[in-house]
Amino acid sequence: MSPKQHRGEVTVDQLLDAALRVYGESGEQGLTVSAVTGASGVSPGSLYHHFGSMDGLLTALLTRWLERLLGEMVTALERSDSARTGVEALVRAYLTFIRDHRDAGLLLHSSRADEIGMRQARQLRDAQEARLTPLSAWVSRHVASGEVAPLPVPLLESLVLGPVIGVSRRWLTLGDVDLDEAAEVLPDRIWRSIGADAG
Image (cartoon, rainbow, N blue to C red; front, side):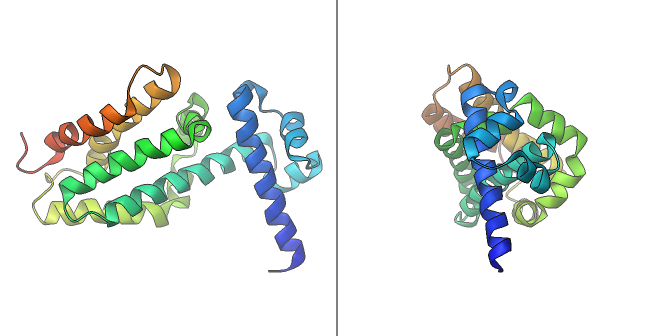
């Protein structure tokens, strides 16, 4: 990597790190060019050079943290020896990630993230293909083994992640749910909805 490329990567990291700090402190309304460049020490011209716009910066920030979350989930699944323990590991990994990275969790579960996700669903999914393929393969493998009910993969993903996302949103916005309790309760409840012999 050339020195220029390295400087570019450092600048991108500075901008993304600053954008998350600003988002965590001020919310989306505080996420402005001047706030991000002020917090990062990077010029507005560099922000536009690397991201094109604030929308481009926000999309890159979402992509960065989505990739990290998916990486944690894949790692958790790969360490599991059965479908049921995989569900438990995935739930714990997701909730731990949200607790450890609250600002990123707020961003990932924001209405803006939903809006970008709806508008750019295909592009985001394609960008995360390397992370999503192991998840889909894991689900397909356990369907083939007879452990998981033979349902379409998108439906299985929704049955597994829907409750976890709902609890995460509630913890992030209202704070009236205990993530440790959720990590104990949700795996069994989710398993009942996807296990081939559950019910």
